[in-house]
Length: 186
Image (cartoon, rainbow, N blue to C red; front, side, top):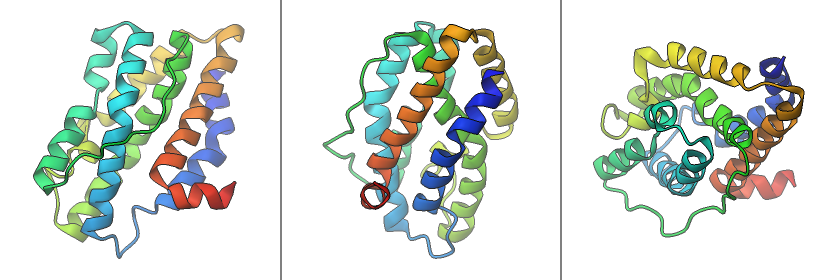
């Protein structure tokens, strides 16, 4: 089953980025949090158009867009967007885009935990934490719906492309969000 394969084959990449970003550390500073949001915003600025083009279904992808949330967060925190952005290739197929989207949609459940930590640690909620709050109470239902859509495209031919795109997305995110750590891990 594709979902089991994705979970198994991306576990190490997921664990590595989670550990290296360490967003739940007790001494998370507002400066570090703001800098990370700026890096996320730069990633989404180039990633969202690539995914939207490959998926080709705005009714499906539109509600999953998060760039506007990051724009709101940066404005609320008084942070300027970064001039640069990571390189994100166009997705050749919908399956590749869905594999990449798996990484970002999968992070929404953990985002709620991060949002609660940011609220407690930094006193930031609402504007300034919208990206991590994202779907709020609807997160579990949105994740279930995404998983169903992913299962719906699963074939022996597409599964490898989905998994490869998910792994590539984790790698791009890790290099961009935790650049010093990415070098250390090789």
